[in-house]
Length: 194
Image 1 (spheres, helix red, strand yellow):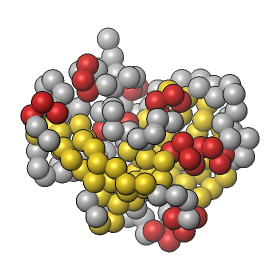
Image 2: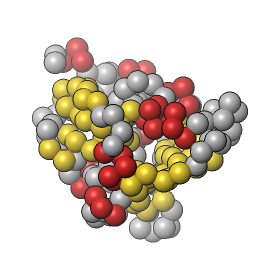
Image 3: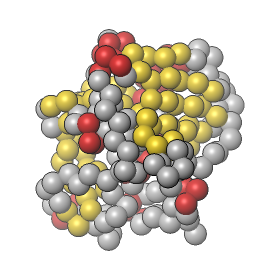
């Protein structure tokens, strides 16, 4: 990777800084589950062991935080979101996805969420990751499973992901309700709503 891999306004870090709402849930793998709801033909819940039965992929990619740092060349392993979505069967009218994490805002109790247009969520590189650089995804980075949306700023990559709600309506997530961009594309520096 070279410095040309950095979007505008970003600096490269070799560490992986830990940023969150101040709530870091500890979820043992055997207790983790993912609920898929909303505008799908087959709503269901996947357990850790059921997720492990789905085809896993490995990918290498960069991770860009809206605060201005990027970690290049991460090695990820997990399940493609589009493969899991195909099992749930999004209805034709589904256009958006709201991902929910197990963490909450300590002040309000509001759960962490991020919204995505469905065409962005179902891209090949969007994963439910459980492995980072050859080891289980650390808890402080959203383990046992987090959403990874590598083309967008990292707040869209929900840590401790426990829910995916397919929707006909675009509902803003936690940071979007606080003035952050709905599109969140690092190469266009889409940090805040315009």
